[in-house]
Image (cartoon, rainbow, N blue to C red; front, side):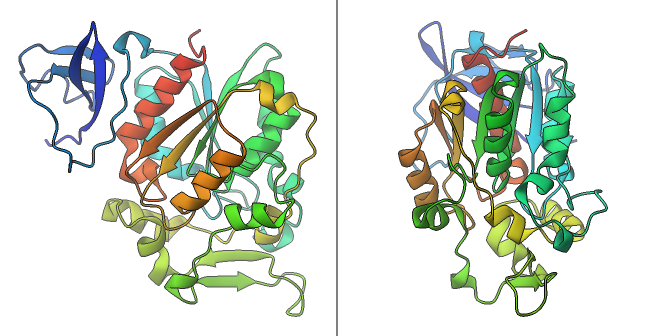
Length: 325
């Protein structure tokens, strides 16, 4: 049986090590000199420098900071995706003892609503807000948003700042006020014009009104969103993607009173992203600097293309910002 491994560079007691995120079945199968394992981690001392051309993401981490358990993770998908897109990350987290919730926003996943009937951002985000509202008063969560799900994370943090331990934006739209200025639209709205006529649009308010929903046509989906992801995952996505409520998402606008900056934020930048391009991500990070920035050599969908590294970053962020219970 083959197992997929991903590496980061770590420091332990002053020495450099290779840390490999592995499936539980792979632990114990590989015999190495100087082996150390904990949960999903295996570390082998480095004996030579890593080649510069290797695309592995490097992140120095103290292994003592990597927790086995942390607070509740709530994972939020982007437009057209659903809770299903987190299946790899959820599996890694739950097998490591973490509590995980994956929410379907309105008209997404198994939610029965028609995207053309979801006309406000509040309506679109109601499933996430309801989940957070129902949490016990003293429970805090680590809120993770992918792509346009960053807007949902921002609104939820504004409404429930005491319930959010940490907000994580993964290749996500990170706009403090939502879409309020021309620069917000420039940074936060994907420009896919280089690929041609890529969208199927829905006009729920009439053909003479702005479109209410959108989905990328099947023939463009892999090259735009999943070009570095396994074929199986892009095939799964093609089967499960649904039109997203475009009008509701682009109407997201937030009034904030300074409370949101009391919640720490982490941004995960994806360097080979065709959707939210690296320049757009960089601009959002510069305009609203997060507490910490991680970088992945990933396409727009690191939950598919680099799941072990993304999992490692989420665990690292949880440890760095007090996620242990």
